[in-house]
Structure formats: structure tokens, C-alpha cells
Image 1 (cartoon, one colour):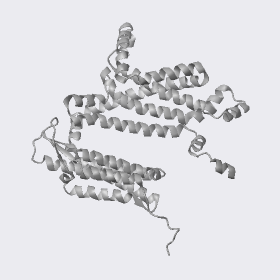
Image 2 (cartoon, one colour):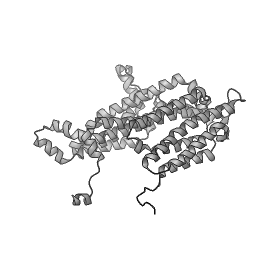
Image 3 (tube, helix red, strand yellow):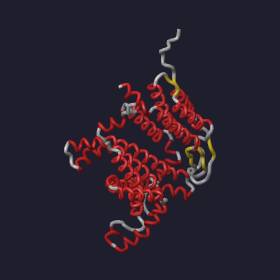
Amino acid sequence: MTDSTASPTRFDRVALTGALVTLVGAAVLPFVELRANRLVPGSGHSLAAAGPWAFVVWGVIALAFVSAVGPSAKARSAASTAGAYGLVAAIAWALGAAAEGLLADMSPVARVSVGGGAWVMLVGAAILGFAGAEERSRFVVRRAGPVVLLVVAVAGALVSGGLDRISLAREFAVRQEQFVSLILGHLAITGASLAAGAAIGVPLGLLAARNRRVRGVALAVTGVIETIPSLALLGLLVVPLAALGAAVPWLRDLGVRGIGPAPGFIALALYSLLPVVRNTYVGLTSVDAAAIDAGRGMGMSRRQLLFRVELPLAAPLVMEGLRVAAVLLTGIATLTVFAGARTLGILIFEGLGQFAPDLILLGALPTIALAVIADIGMSALARAVTPRGVRVAVQTPAPTFAEEAAA
């Protein structure tokens, strides 16, 4: 007689999707591309070019399929995590092995680039990582441990696995000093613009919540700014800033001029206003009137109500606006190179001008990484500045009608 209480095996659809994506990338698309030099098109080579490492990759793909099936959420999470991080590490070593094998009899200017199959497999690894993220996020050790092992594995592939011979790594080696300065410039203009947007947007959102006329003007103007294309806004700022710098010498000495970081800084600060102003306004107007009445009953002044009741309760939405603005500005900052700012966009547009895809990736991939880091960092900051009671109230679902009736 079967035990009806036994928990049936369940399928994790997200993990299964990730496994199928990796399978398509490994079986259908070229793993690497061999080119005579960095500019000309090349010929695609399958995963078999990685030699013995191809079998390791196939083994991890098999583990990815296993991660989609499991008796419990913890088992599926552990398997999908192992599949995700193991797949990235195996791909790194396989790319290095393929580069060493294909470049063995080629001229020094020959290049091996990452093929479409490897990129698709990395996307599949990301999906596998998401599959176990909810269960894994409960434990810091489970989050940090695999990351440390992955960094060690990729570093090993760079040092002794041949990964440094991939075209992307060679582009980085040539432009290492420039790359560091562009990263710092990208972070500087994005961070300064976000700080300026917060300094203007949060008080403006507060005024919008207090005054109907201010609300209409503030939301309308920031909405219109957001619809202006980035390059058009930069172009509109160049002429007046050039005139202002010419008319006021001390502003010119501070860097206010038509060409340089000033137009990019102002444009990014303007783009950050809409999410910050709107979220601040929505957060403050969404505060429960009962909480405000309770504060008034305790004898709080209007200022005390703002800083002790309204802003703490609105903090999650305010920080969400800042998070959205940070991710948005990280991407738009690449376009400020057209106004003279030194950001990662320089590498992207140099690569486009030279028809060098790996140089484009050298600028694009760090930009994506910075956006992801900004998203994670602002989410962590939001959690840190939000009072614990508010976090619990936000995370706890409201009782349903049936539950209230039963109570």
C-alpha cells in the first residue's frame, strides 16, 4: 500500500528553463570564434574545441537538469546553485583550453573570441542561479561561499588555464590603465548625479505631497524631462553651458563649460528626478492617516511628525526611487561621452568605430556589472535605513477577508 503522505517529486520550472538554455547553447551555437585578427570575421568552433573540458561542461549541464527535480525546495536550491556556479567555472576553463588549442599554430595577431554558445550558456547559468536564490538568500554562508569558490576558479583559469588568451582579456591587457580611469570616471559622474538628484528630488517630492500646485508642476516637468532623448538633452545643454562658462570665469575654472563632464552631470541629475520625486510623493501620501493622528495625539509637532513618522514609513518607496535612478543613470552615463565625459562609453563607441566587438564588450560588460551592483547595493542600503518594524510590516502580507472573518 502506498504512503499517501509521502511528498511527491516536484519540477522546478525555472531551473528546467535554465538547463534547456544551456543545452541549446552547448549543442547548437558555436562555443568560440577564431579570427585572423581583432577586426575581421572568424569561423565558429563548437564546444569540442575545449578538449577534455568539454566533458566537464556537459557533466555540469547534466547536473543542471537534475536540479530541476528534487524531493524538497532545499535540495533543488542546492542543486541549481551548484549547477549555476559550476557551469560558469567550467565555461571559464573550457574557454581557456579552447583558446590555447586554437591559437597554438596561429600568428600572434590571431584572436579567439567568446562565441554565441558560451554567452547563451552563461545566461542559462544565471537562470539556474535565480532558481535557488529564494531559498539560498536565507543564509549568508550559502550566498558567499559559492561566490568565493567561483572567483577562485575563474582566477585560476586566468592565471594558468589560458583564459587570458581570450580576445576580451587581451583587449583589457592593452587598455588596463585607461580602463581603470574610465571605471572611476563612470562611478564619479553617476554617483555625483544621483546625489544631486536625491538632494533636489526628495525635498521636491515632499513639497509635492504638501502642495497641490507644486505637485502638478513637479510631476509634469520631471515627466517631460524623462521623455527627452539623452543625446538631445546633452546637445541642448552644450550651448548654454559654454556661454555661461565664457561669461563667468570662476565657473569655467570649476569645469562648467560646453564640452566636459558638466553637461553629462546635469543631464543625469535631471533624469534621476522623476523616479525620486514620484516615489517620495507616493511614499509620503501613502502613510496611514491613523499613524499621523497617533503622532499628533502624542503632541508631536509637524517637523517631528515628518522625521519620526512620515519619512520612516515612506523610506522603502523613497529608497526604491533612488535604486531605480541609480540603475538608470549607470546605463545613460555611457552616452555622456558625446559631451566630453570620460566614462565606459568611450570603449563602447571606440569599438563601434573600429568594428571591434571585443572592445565593445570591454565597455558594455562592466557597465552591466555596475548596474547590477548598484541595484544590489541600493537594495541593501534600503534595508539598512528602513526601520525594522516597517520592514516587517511591508514583508508581512495583509490578512485575507476569510482570515479576518475567522478571527
